[in-house]
Length: 288
Image (tube, rainbow, N blue to C red):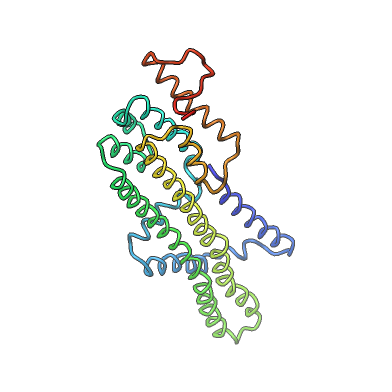
């Protein structure tokens, strides 16, 4: 779980509270129900109105993911695919069907089933590219919804301030109340700016970044499974997919992944009675 969003929001609101405390102001002066209802309620409402109901439901469903962060490590995916490569070379492509039921990744699950069914490489690539494009479109839609809320919120806050100031002008016959009423009027603008920059825009940016990472992971799955189908060695698959990862995993992670895939291969060969005599022998295909 990546706590970057939670940490960032806590620090941002903590800085705001620190400023209020240092200024000698009261936090209760900002927690006014009327402007908060207008800013949050109207912002979400016009956000829904600017798109479709499906966009809103998709964004709401994506909200927990913004707090959880990326699910699974790309290096773990690479190690898993290298293991499938070893299985395919030792047991045949049909053996990959055994991993369909246990695989939780829908893209990899689809790839395993297609390879076992004998789908050719070109059709498999088209199939996986369509699945990736669909997932990327959903991710962009969720991110764009929260970015849209971030654009509407400050303007909605200004509308609330204008409404409150109109009420203030009706009370010019009571000068002693003008100061508190004007201060209250600007709370709506404050919440508009605050919600946009402390909530909506960070969530939208977070979902956008998670979408990019998910697209990278799915691309690794596609290229990896195509390599498995072509009969590539586990070592080649490991190196090929590691080169696709933009954040360049550390050598320790790569060695750990290679060791894990090699160990899995030895265990499967041992079950078939073809384990090499020397435990230090390289995995199948490593010297090809």
